[in-house]
Image (tube, rainbow, N blue to C red; front, side, top):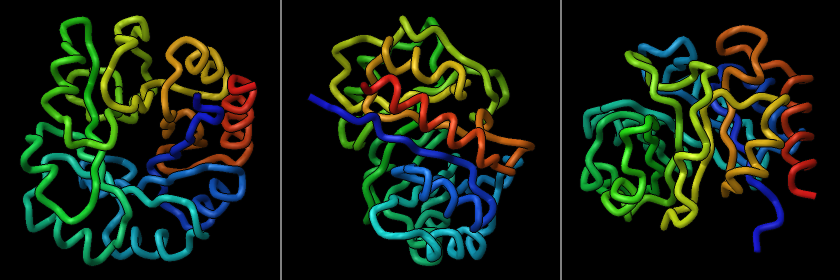
Length: 209
């Protein structure tokens, strides 16, 4: 039985914030390589963040509908340990690279999560975010957690509107493998707040007791 819920803090844009996240207990940090995101960082800046991380903190590179050569370049230049695909990428595309991946899905009442998990059986996990028309995440909006089947065959990474006030309830209800937060621990878009990150991680630990 899982004892500790894994914490991923996404949308890091500054080295000092990534190091603070790691010191507070984040297991993974995400850098956004999607140019239309307000949290976008270049490969060069992402590499600086990744290089600064201490051991045993997983760097994750988030992309949305990239070309194959963009992914290969990011792997070479950023050196993440895990890829996160947040667009309409096929399972064959996602699994065609040298790194493991997680697949993000924007959840609505019409989403067949079981079929989606079967389609992406090669993924290390499914990241469940909120469907917001025209947005690819980082909206700070929750979805109905009761839509998540208990018997999903892949590890669940819960995202979408999580913050220090609701993460304990989210974990108790969903019992995900991991939680992923971005806007819920920010002072401004792309600017993480140390106190909010600390409160979020405390909330996770409280739910795990």
